[in-house]
Structures are given as structure tokens and as C-alpha cells.
Image (cartoon, rainbow, N blue to C red):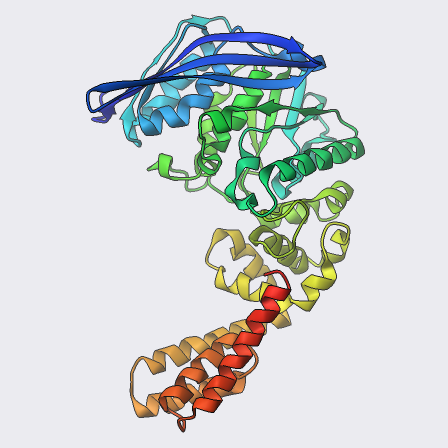
Length: 462
């Protein structure tokens, strides 16, 4: 059907996929040619993409089908306008799902009308493995906890994976370097897998760097690529969902501008075939629900890692703040003394609570805020009280009326030297002489408190 979208401006051609064994490793190598027409001129380049596993897992790699590489290219093809062709056939069941059920809504709600021009072949037989990733984050450990001892054997985990398909190139790790984070993450996963009692498959790939993938927007495709590369091993694979309910009000409008978690409920179902089922674990559960589920899980208490700033949990980045405040709200902080500096958290709890309050309308923190308020957490209650007073101050101040100025000052004065917000506002009042006797010295005293508070924040790592 013609949805009135622009036709593709280029083409991806998969010319070959080879299987190579060397130095105890096995890999599939794809030769990919990209052509694109710009201003009536054709540009072309060729890349060699690989996916590598330990030698004993080489027998599970797929080189007879182009399935994995087609899925890998889908996001770029649809969002930038590339048709996909291949000299290697595609499994008929996956080809059918993608062309009949994935492309039409993605094209209708996207930018380009693309085509997939490949021969099809019989699907490969299903494998025997049941897997999930082991990043040791909240979502990952929640999936492991849910299925490591699942009562139905056919759905019980048999293998764990850690894949290098883009996460460690994330710009968030500029401070310590993505390679350092990767090495530490692999070592952590080995220790966790040993404690869990399941084999860990450690893989490597150059696809993220070679294709310049933006991991934030493509990780569902690159992770599915890694699974499909080992299609001969799996019969089902659990993909850890993002910790927000994207099912209840599901939509793929403007999907290419959104993170893939928003349309994973659709994507993973379409990528599933009779021989390999993808399952999105906990897709209607909040992140707080997941943290609650793993709060007493010994593996999580020993190995949880969600930091976006350092090779160990820093306690001060956005994810660490969310985890710490969530555990606090659940009364489970002391369970995680092995992976977090709880003394630091308790000494600087007010900072954490301000962050929760400031982000209370964002899904990342909403449930945490609600739970802490339900618990009547005293630190958060004070934050809410001060923040409410400052909102009232601002409303009165904007009137530029002498009586309103006096009322604004009266509201702010009790909170002086209890938080930066009241001091900043009172410095403004003293400097201007609105609502209070003008005093440059008192204005500077107010600001000195703020300056010292910022110094303390920096010294604490924030």
C-alpha cells in the first residue's frame, strides 16, 4: 500500500556472510555495501561486520541466512531511507513477519518507504537454549530472577549472555572510558553467572562502531541481531523491558524519534517465529516494581550495577540516585551495602530527595516519589514543603507589588539556610530592597550559603 512516504535514497546490499574460526574464537563476517544518491551523485562504501563468540559456541552461529543482519539494519534503513538486498537468503518465516507485519506500520508512521529484496529459504530448526542478557542492571537481574528457577522447564533459563553491540560506546562513560566499563562489566557478569550457576556466553562485535549506531535509539535492533546470530542455540530469549508500561497505551506514532522501549512490545512479537520466541520480561512493571522483586535476591544484592558514570556504582549519577531512593522507599537499603556506599547516601540524602522531587513528573522517578510520599519520608516531606513555599514566593514576586513582596519574604524567611532556593530568592530581595530593607551584605551572606552548598555537592561527587 502507498502511504505517501518518500522512496528510499540508498541501498544496503549484503553480498556475503562467512563463518571463520581462529584462535579459539568463531565469528560470522558480513560484507555490506552501502550506496546512496546525494545531489544526483552516488556515494558508496563497503564494510566488514562481524559477530564473535567463544569457539565452543561456533556451531550455533548462523551464516546460511541473512536474518540477523537484516534486523540489524532495519532502524537505519527505515529512518534514513535504505532498501535492503542480500545475496544470502532470509528465513521465510521472519521475512514474512517483517514484510507483512512490521514494515507497513513502521512505514506508515515513519519517513521512508523501503523494500527488502531477498530470496527466502526454509527456517532453521529451533535450538534448545533459553537465554537472557546479564548486564547486572535492574531490568537484567529482574529477568534472571524471574526465569532462573521457572517451574515450567521449557521456559527455564539455560544460558546467560553479555553482548558488546553498542552499550559501552555510550557517551555517558566519557569519564572512565567505554572500554574500561566493558572490561569491568564482563568481569562482573562472569562472577554473577558463576553464582547463578549458568554458563555465560561472552560475545564481541564491531557493528555499533562500523555503522555508527546510536545505541539509545537502536539497542533493540542490535540486541536482536546478537540473538539471531546464534539462532541455532535458542528456542526462546527473554529481553529485559525498560521499566515503564508501554503496553497499556501502546502507539508507534513517530516511532523513529522515540527510544525503542516504546515500541518493543510490537517489535519483539513481530521478530518472534515458531522456531525462536522473543519475550519482553516485565513489560507492564515499573522500575520500582522490579527493584522490589529483586530487593531480597542474593545475586542482585551482590552484583547489582546500574551506573552511567563509573565502573562501579558511583552513588551520584541519575540511575544510582533512582536505585538508592527506590531501595530507601522500599526499606531495603541495607540489603545493598556490598554495591552502594550507604554512608555517603545517608549523609547526602537531602540532595537525592531534591532530585526525586525535581523529576517527580518523569516516569524514571514518579513511582519512587509516590512511594516515599506514601511513607511520609521526613527528608522528602521537608523538600516538598520548601519547594511549595518557593513556588508561592515566585507567584507573589511576579506581581511586582509591595504588599506581595512582603508576603513573599515572609514565606521564604523561615527556610533561610535550609536549602539553596530560599537563599537565592532572599538574596534577590535584599539586593533589590523589595519586601525587605535593602542590604548588599545580607544578600552576599545568602549567596555565600549557596556557594558553600555547591562546594559541598561537588566535594561529595555530585
